[in-house]
Image 1: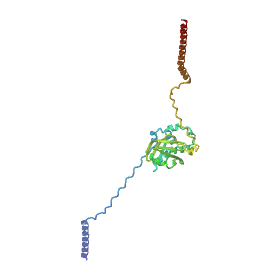
Image 2 (image 1 turned 90 degrees about the horizontal axis):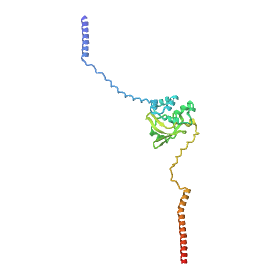
Image 3 (image 1 turned 45 degrees about the vertical axis):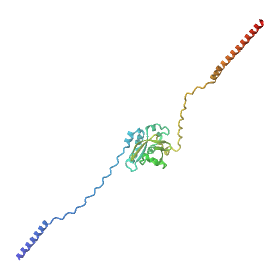
Image 4 (image 1 turned 180 degrees about the vertical axis):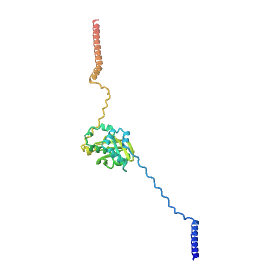
Length: 265
């Protein structure tokens, strides 16, 4: 009985050793390789931030318009439209001399809301290159950032862009900045909207007449000069007639004396 127990333990130990030996001799199963991840595309670079204050400060003289932008807080609206929208912005900037030339109507009589709307009236909520204004000239009034009631009419005359706000007729004199998404164009007059100043637009002053060409003309002979000339021409004829008459008188006297002398002898 004890022998059978010993032999069972021996068999079990043998089986265990053989299984361990087989496990050590068999090569490990290859591990499954996971596919390498596809590299994700690099994010597009963020557009460069456009600082309108810097552009208007160095391009000037636009100090008056920039002061109005800051005092009315419209600068924040322009900056947001330029840098945080897909449409961009187009701004028409009057020179300082345009504000100085503005006498009637005066901006000093406007309320804060009216002044803010007037400054917003100088921008459109989309980027327009100079070539785009040729198409805008056929579309009629174009709305501005001030609202649909504040619109501008454009005319492209052989590449020169003309603007008409009702009260103001001006043109784009130069491009200050024209890179998407921001376009800034210089204009010669302040844009005055009808929505603020009404439709009773005063007539345009007539263009000054050209100065007459006053050139020294040749002096015409006066009547007195003519009279003197005619009298001076008549004098030689009168003196010659007197000479002829005196010569005839002397001939008659000589003939009479000669005849008397012949009769005497």
